[in-house]
Length: 111
Image 1 (cartoon, rainbow, N blue to C red):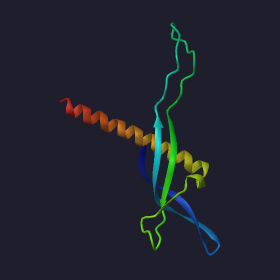
Image 2: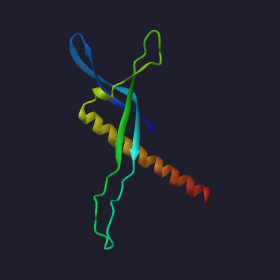
Image 3: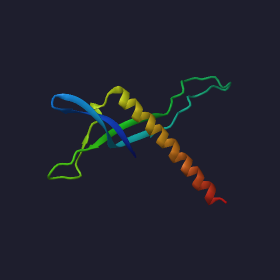
Image 4: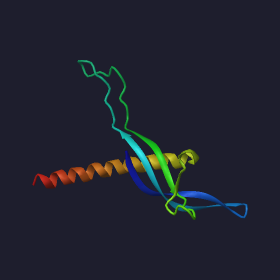
């Protein structure tokens, strides 16, 4: 499980009017690496390749109250498809950045 801190444009109601603002969120997600399908002896595909996949597990929006100042609510089910797609792309970018950092650390270790 990985965590990503980012922001999201989130709607709210004021005097019956809908407005929105940018809110900080924490995204919990899992990453599945790409998988190359089996090949025959000649290198021809016997089964399709699977692309890398991101699964959003939780999208936590801070919602502090008078009793619990650190309360959050999971808004995953409330996301629009466009918001979900944007978060999945950000998570893939996060995975790529983590991989680059690990490679740099390995290179520094072996110098």
